[in-house]
Image (cartoon, rainbow, N blue to C red; front, side, top):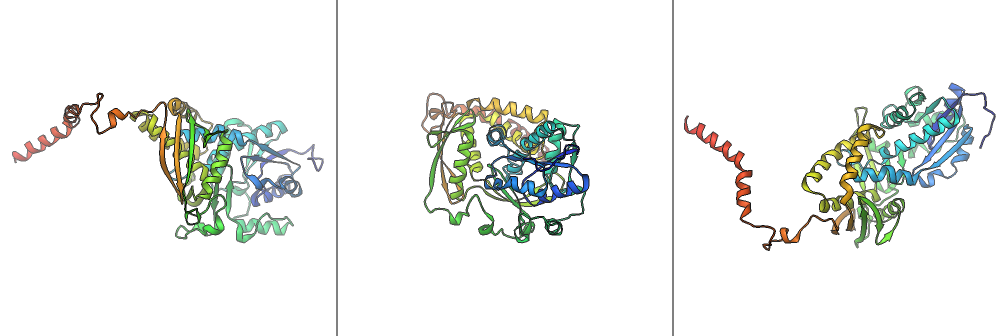
Length: 411
């Protein structure tokens, strides 16, 4: 893949997507640092975005391009642990970009060490979350490597400026001004930011925006039924067919997308302190989260379920903030794995025009007992026992009321 002799030059590894920012950065690095630029694209399920990437990277001035396929590792080691945790950022965002950044950064570090590079460069902006996510991982894994963040250094202030830079230096831009949404795609999701979305009062132009799913209005008029089977919190079968997690997610994206599932519009709080507005498509992910939670309702006891719901908020914050390679995240994952020992069983769902509707679940570890729960009196539950329980449970309220009554009567 070498296209010139740069043996005497220092090397920098660039997180390369083939998009506008990284296309400009290759030229900018060579012009300002005289580096040999080694482009690295980490494949986490970008699909067709990888087509023609090597030719694009080399023609832009990179000395070589690595394409590292880590899709299965991404799903097994990042997506599934996050699903098990139940982590959802600010009640909406299913952490698609956030989950992918640690494994991408890990690969950047591996290749930088292999190539003897002195620095890693990324194209995240100085206003975004990704700069934090990339750099925290690099610091955790290879603290001696330099980090170059052009958006915090150069004079380019917008995507329009970047397009102008391409025109000035004769660089073929991979997009046009009228289509310069900031997008991030992987097997889990597709995000959209920028342009008209920057005004929260604007309804998104979904017909021109969506790529993984459809609007509920365009979904079929008949529901689609699916069945997911889990083993210790991990999905293992879809509609009775055994598959690996990557295949299950791929198929759920197709099924969910056709039914308008997983469309989220959120104004979120970024790590750096500002609010931003984004539209996310997560069809398969939304289904997995829903199905997994349904099984937990059946299999986890009250105290564990309640505590895990609290923990999931912190887990989401850690993932969102790029703190994957931290002792706390690892400790929380250990707790989550312990809770999943009995999260085994089947979940049926009905998908209809953007809605996920429960259609029944079962588990050999189900804590639901018909004899206890039924309105028909069974041997395991005596209705009379409730009286004593209520008297004790309500004792603090009764004592407090008696105190106030006593005070009022003495006035």
